[in-house]
Length: 612
Image 1 (tube, rainbow, N blue to C red):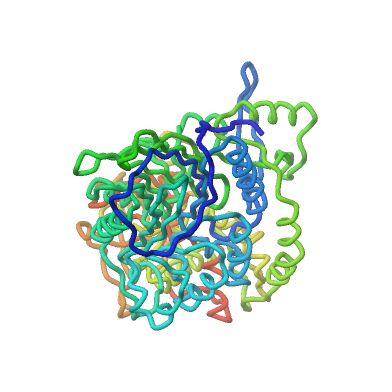
Image 2 (tube, rainbow, N blue to C red):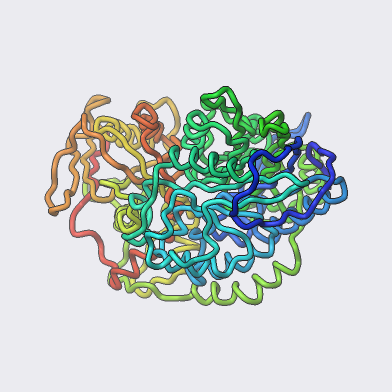
């Protein structure tokens, strides 16, 4: 395969997990080179994710096509290949997982993590940190998961002994020590300290401050003779940076949670790929170097989402345990069964088109064609996929009367009926997940069809009603920015004084919120009524200066389709405390619909629209 990355030649030894016992901290150390493959936020994406890409070979027009990115069999093939390459070249190699294997597809809905434990155990993972979504089903699901996997699971700042369910789980560790070329490499893991605010751990489970715990772990590992230290986290890139700035002695942080695909945006743009949660205004460099209080250096990496790709980093550590080199990159993986859109249907590429795409990818530094591991594909197709197909046929609710989908109303009371239900379902599920929000916003374009009277199936929701499966995020926003965002989104949807053509899919529907828009009024005053449904079931005016917690899909939360106003959150402390729930809008709606049993329109209007 192409793109063998930054080979470092050293003698190789097997990694052996040592007991966490005391060791002579004054042992004579030697320099050490490591090659580490890393993944995070795979979210039960056993199958590839179809992505629209676009390339423009020199002298040719822009060509748009669809590619199937990642998936577990492709990831396994690549990790096996990297491991073999490292062995052949005499390099020390390990695989680290930044957490959030749970949630994201019907595979998890059906199998509750059993499929994750089995397939991840076949990938040669050396250590994994718990993600927040591992706690979504409570501690028993974690206990089951860690008892099945064949690699250590880390959670340094979770007080395991505080949990009646987890206290006897032998495979949850504060840290592990691996012997590499005679050197002790310490690995510990951080989880979010506010876990009770964003997930559903058992109420008796305690979590400790991240920075304080990190320094304690470094000191503990050094006292046991490990002066080469890796932290695997599921706390997000900003928190990783904050820990690195405050803590001495961490050489490498392998992160997760923010699902950041670190790397050159120009390279990603060259294939038409938009990385999740990558802000062009931020430093998106892969292998970010942060200075510690004592002048030492920490390298931070993270590898995106959904098993679409992998990160590969080479680090060099001095005998004193100081970072002397850290470099590498993230790489997307694709199959070679590309398609294009013709008359709203997906068809294979022509021979010339296929050749052009393959040639372009083979020269790209950010994507490569990787085959699937056939044995793992067979396991998925024979042991897991049939049950998922059956689940897709499952009836989740009865619909007494047709629920219309309307992008832009034509009358004041002409809003769609299914659209506000989708928005309401996001509010319902986010709060059930403990990702508390005050209200939600859903763009009309994310909803794709009416729901006819009769039985509603999982397959209809996943394949027709909400096919995009955008994940839902929560963040802080001032009331005045909510007002401005809603007004501009409506303007944008109808092309009113925006300077661009109308984009009807931008029209905003809301959950636990109600607004009136009058297009005949002057710009900046078109939202004439904006009210929040409070915890007592009463409608209250939105306070322009108050900070609210908002839920929205990650597509519009990134500022797309007329929702640039949602980025005003970044002016608030901690950039608005943005959290990706990791759960798709279709999953949220399905669970909401099933909880209702009978799906009726909301008993109140959330949108009143007066056209210009």
